[in-house]
Image (cartoon, rainbow, N blue to C red; front, side, top):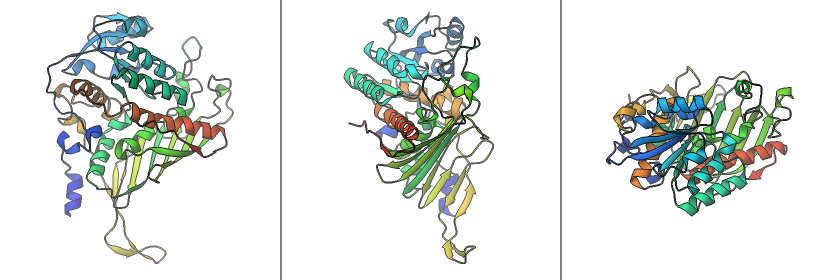
Length: 401
């Protein structure tokens, strides 16, 4: 086994080895005894973020519009205080930060409300639904000076953490193209409440939920997506008719150019003969890394050193493809001891919680701060506009300072 392959298989599993720059750094074991008092809002998705296991957190209060969900939140986070609305929770002077797991169309408004109330914010994805909302959230974050983090799971999947480490150490060479897929058929089950009324998910455009894909490139290389051609597919199913988004598509695809001139493509699909997945691929001139589909192994491909004849008779460097023994980073000291267990979305949930709390304790920007969040979010908004305009090539705004 050559030295390169030994490195890939026996990758170091310490947090110190992962720092790419300050914006990619993870905190190790906590060095502070300070307790952050957090309010958790949203008793469905919000149940899965293990705040009560973090040594620097007290869950001060929870909130949901539904009493049954408030009760579940209180039980999950060992909390005795609950509020019937976000507005009431934001009046609690003991709460320093809020974690918002509310419906997607409410994210921008709820983030702005929380910042205006003087609370730091962790919010579910995406950051906004329109470009106008992107600018409004950005203005609120910059005006208040408070911390904002978007809870993007793809940034903290075990494979993405590995890809960050590989990128930092130059294993890819130049990443010239990437792709990502988010396949979630069956979402129609969530389109309606038990009484038949429509939920916010009814007819939701797939490309307005892009961050499970865009994170795979941006979190690793820091690139910005600058231009896009988007395409959508729909089958005139009556269930899509008359939705509040005026969306005709079940599935969306987008083809991007990055600010470094590289290619990136994504697919977000709600219907089809598709295996559920959230996965990415990073293709470099020295090495490529392929996340697995469900029940399949992760792979790496090395640019070959051995010259051979291909089927056409050409002499080429033969590429070498190998199964990759994927690290489980949640087992390491990248997390506090009590949080070293598997969690939702590929082990990402505990990392999201720890990164947000660490950013508050250390008074630094979280990895997925407002600029990263908008870089993840806006490309999907523009891609959907492109799809509605027959694939017109469109420019994507850059929200960086």
